[in-house]
Amino acid sequence: MTKRCFWICLMICMVNGLYAQAPKWMDKARQAVFSVITYDAEGKILNSGNAFFVSDQGVALSDYALFRGADKAVAVTTQGVQMPVEYILGANELFDVIKFKVQVPKKVPFLLPVAAKLAEGSSICLLPYSTQKTKSFTGGTVQTVDKATGDYSYYTLKMALKEKMVSCPVMTSTGEVVGLAQKAMGQDTASICYAMDVHYAMDLKITPFSATDVALQGVHIRKALPDTEEQALVALYMASTQLSAERYMEMLDTFIAQYPHSADGYLRRATQILSMEATAGAMSRAERDMEQALQVATNKDEAYYQCAKLIYTYRLRVGAEAAGTWTFAKALEELQKAIAIQPLPLYRQLEGDLNYAEQKYDRALAAYEEVNRTNFASPATFYSAAKTKEVMEAPMEEVLVLMDSCVARFSTPYTVEAAPYLLERAQMRMSAGQARGAVSDYDAYYDAMKGQVNHLFYSYRAQAALKSRQYQRALDDCTKAVELNPGELTYRAELAVVNLRIGRNEEAISVLQEALKIDASYAEAYRLIGIAQIQLKQPKAACESFAKAKQLGDPNVDALIEKHCKK
Image (cartoon, rainbow, N blue to C red; front, top):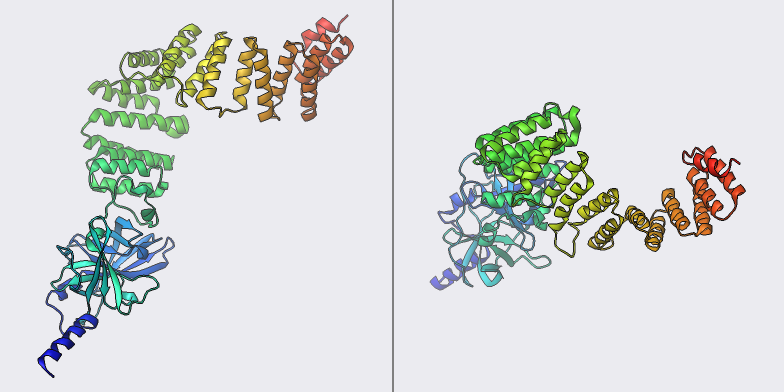
């Protein structure tokens, strides 16, 4: 054989087969490649595949498909050592890559990424996972280099790829990793395969908005948190409404492990514990977290405030008996420590709420009024003061002054945020005998809600319209209330009353007869029919109706019987 033929044969072996002798770096590099077994929620094996470490702390890369639907995963080294996958660090389903952290007892061998993109024609080799001592490996060349996304590459390789080699590292001749070996569905892998840029996989990360990431949601293993505490807190906030209670608790545990000196983590976990379980044991665990939060907190006043708020909301939710020693007084005691450090309006607002809950209305009002003299004043703070004055039986005019200040904090046209306060002021105006003002507020509420109101609203506005002598509006609203809730007999009675007020006695009787078809024992219907019959000069029929109402227990019919039927 000539020397030229020898080198041609050697190159063919390098590209399509096995090197006769592996490079020196390969022995150590093999130790960075391992097997992964994934399991479902019941502990059944889902998949098995390959992965490799890219840091000595256990950060590794593999294909996303291996982890899809997994609740648990275990890494198995070439020596047979098993290590659990701790959490996911990033994933992309489109490019079929995932980055994760393995719980390693000590530093592990890892592969360094190639410094620069490879050119077409560059020699590469695939480093397989193997528990054997064989030093064989598959060689090949880069056929094409395409742009995947951003500045990352997608390599087409002239190299055979077996099923069990997917996600093994594709290496340079000097021992740097180029990418993860991949196959394309429906294509021949006997001579062609692909590799996703290792830099793309290594740059995957968890962001504050990862809780909504579809790819990450498809893997049920715990996710890591962003790299900074600030971003991690945003991630917690986003996840609180996206994850199940159990998954969110796992995330809180991860946050505390990653940021043990953050009071926010302990306070949020205490809140989550109590939301999941209302028991003495849960209170005890939450109390330990609250104590830890106070120990590590930089802003002690904020920590005391959060503890007070947690006790207050828990006591409101579960009641006095279940809350045990977590009383409003205990919450107030914690809050006073915050106020002693810094008397912020926010703390004063909670002070008012706690005193209101304790029925110490004068103290509650004083706290609310103090808040309303600051820039912290809001619709909610003026509303709190108004309701306190109302329960103290202050003149309704004084209550309405506060409600006016409350509503004035919103700009017009009113939006849905203003709607509850408009409705409340409308009802207060009715109590104050200001029916026209109440109708105006009900109209503003209707507009703020863009017409999305229920039968109760129409009933309330009809009553206000009736008292302000807007009879057609009262008729229309009563009719709408009946239409939306035809089984509510009170609405039919209200419609009959409006008809009676404007002399439409026959219409009133017709409405009431419809009510009696629904419930023949509805006593008020007979009394109102009797009133209509009096207006129609039918005293005998009216007295029969009154007698029927009395028989059915109507307490308001006696005076009518006395006036019209005892002659």
